[in-house]
Image (cartoon, rainbow, N blue to C red; front, top):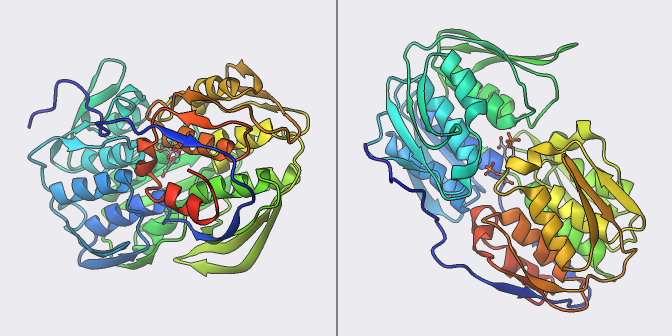
Length: 451
Ligand SMILES: O=C(O)C1=C[C@@H](OP(=O)(O)O)[C@@H](O)[C@H](O)C1
Ligand SMILES: C=C(OP(=O)(O)O)C(=O)O
């Protein structure tokens, strides 16, 4: 198995984008399937004995990287139609050694969760990724997976490319998460599936719980208990997973861009259909409401074991925010677009306790600070956050090109900013949007945006 000597970029050519104000946004949009649930649907189906059906799968580049990886390790993953997939699993313990390096593209979730799967199988796999992913820290999963017995050889600094040599049987561990991360939690639990005994993860601060819900749904023996130390999650291996029929709800992290867009553009009134509202994910909507946003939940229901509703969002004047750092995991991917909302609010927002932003697809504090400054916003960077001086509804100045640094959420955040700007907002590269939300720009046009 050979790993490319230098990280590649999955986006050969940059796609510059210009966005300008276009008047009120109106109409209905259905955002694509949840990225976290889509990754887990493919991975758990790949480990089940039998054939699972998935509908509403997000077909962004990140999830497609996961599909390719589970195929490379022996599962059959077949696309039947838009969002409709059939996956035949190999059974827990049945993953095959891939014959080539697994290309994770831009996706941290694919990398860290799949490292967990490989760690407890008697196989070796090399993980490679694009320039962004190759700069992200993997030590946070290397440490617990090494404790379980996997032999992991990363590039200097605990980064990609790296090789995981799994151990079977691995050693069950009891691990308290040093950083609030659903990816680390999930990597350990997935490694625990093929590990005899009880693997325990303790999370002092709750993070998204899709892995726990879905593992239980697939028939794994899993318990979750709130304790003074935090949530204690215990998984007993070796597990046997039963194939499932999965309906993936719409992604609240994608809906967030439309919610902020409709909130900041005067006269807007849109409905975002089928939005997943798992409380471990819906922090952005709560934060926007606390700022004065008009977000109405219509037809609350349950889809695939997750709370879902349509969100009707109308324009509103906003006041500054000061979100509780304990709520950060429930809106961890939404801070870039929250900064855009804060930049149009009345008053100064101090958003702190989010040092994790510095190790996402880009350093999201620095990248947003530079971009907001370029379009006329006054900001101050903190080691762990950003102070944003709100413009009280005054449109952004426009400008750019904004450097998006291979980060989809930066590109989409500035596209949203461009909808309420007195001159066009120029973005250097919109190509990374395809990692999580391939039809973002066409959907934005359907509600009236000029892009
Ligand atoms: O588990 C997941 O699906 C994810 C967890 C979060 O990452 P961290 O675990 O690094 O916080 C989030 O930022 C990412 O987009 C998806
Ligand atoms: C951080 C993100 O994803 P990942 O870690 O999977 O690359 C994201 O989608 O914002």
